Image 1 (tube, rainbow, N blue to C red):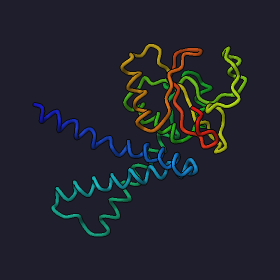
Image 2: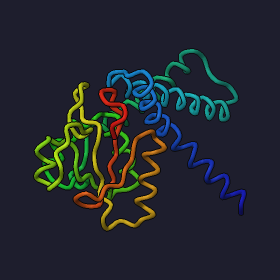
Image 3: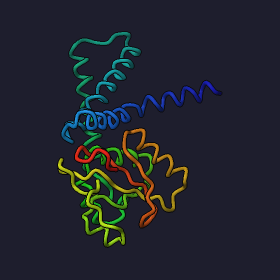
Length: 215
C-alpha cells in the first residue's frame, strides 16, 4: 500500500515539475539577471521545454528501445517548446471574470507582470475559486480605502511597465487552503504577506529592481 502511495506521489510530482520549473525558472531569471519581463518568462518556457523533451525522449525510449534519429529528436523538442509556449500564453493573456472581484480588475490584470499572472493562472487550474481582489493601484486609492497614502508600492507601475503585486481573497476560505496558497507562491519565489488593513487578503509580489526591498 505504501509503495502505491509513493509511486502515485512520484507520478504527480513528475507531471507538475515542468510547470514548477516554468515559473520558478522565470522568477530566477528575473531576480538574478533583471531581464525584460517577457524574456524572463520565455526563459522559464525554455527550462520547462527542455525537461518536457527529456520526458518525451525517456518514454519514447522505454516504448521503442531507441531514442530515434535527429529529426525525431528535433520534432520532440519543437513539440515540447510549443506546448509550453501555448500553456504560458493562455495563462498570461486569458483570465476568467469568475476569478476577478470586479470588472475593473479584469482590465487591470494586463498591467500585472506576466510572471505573476502566469503563476496565478497556473494555481487556478487547481483552485477554481481563487479570487483576485486587487491589482493595479494609484496613490489616491489608499486614501479612498482609509489608509495612509504610500509613496512607493509594488501595486504601482514599475519602470518595466508592469505592476509587481496583486491581492488574493482569504475570506470564506479555510486556513488550510490559505496556507497552501501562501506556500505555493513562496516556493515559486514570490513575496507573500497576509494583510488585514482594509479586508483580510493575501498580498503577493514579485521583486522589483527599482526597489529591491519593497514587498
